[in-house]
Length: 197
Image 1 (cartoon, rainbow, N blue to C red):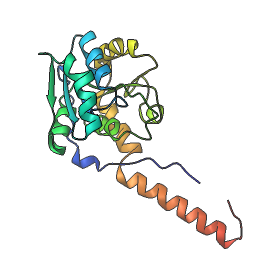
Image 2 (cartoon, helix red, strand yellow):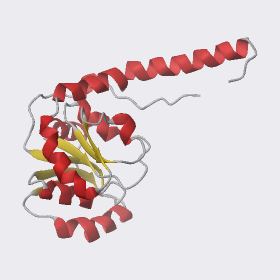
Image 3 (cartoon, helix red, strand yellow):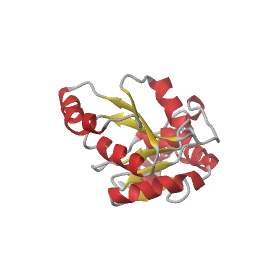
Image 4 (cartoon, one colour):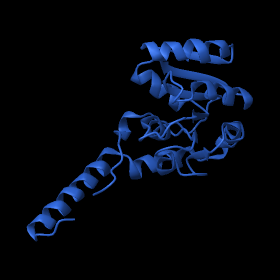
């Protein structure tokens, strides 16, 4: 009947028009989330990486030991137990957020959380990424991990206000609610006239 995206309460996300000096990664310690690729991309772009990455179950720990720990160095800061406020601060103060996903991401809340803070997103194409990130406006979408460092370098040219404006326009809670209401009203009207859509 409809595609209705997830949403967030925009007022809960602090905005900054000043870019930081590091690349952010927020997510699970998982091959699907591309943590190892995030490290490689930030390093190749000459940027420090700050990760707020959960690592609590067995699969996450195994991946971390095999793929992440050998890559850690002084240019990588890993905050394992970041709460929601700390994650928001990391996103707000970043130069950009990198999401080198390796699966068909159903939505990816981190993308809209980052943009709500004014921080552009650099991501690999997959799942909902092209629906969420406005290419060349709120971030860059690439098909090959080797293209991520150049995209990171370009992220500083993007307007941080445009990132927040996109979230306000498309992913704030009132927009999600109005979309649900429209679907329900359309369905009710169809039932009243005996039309099944």
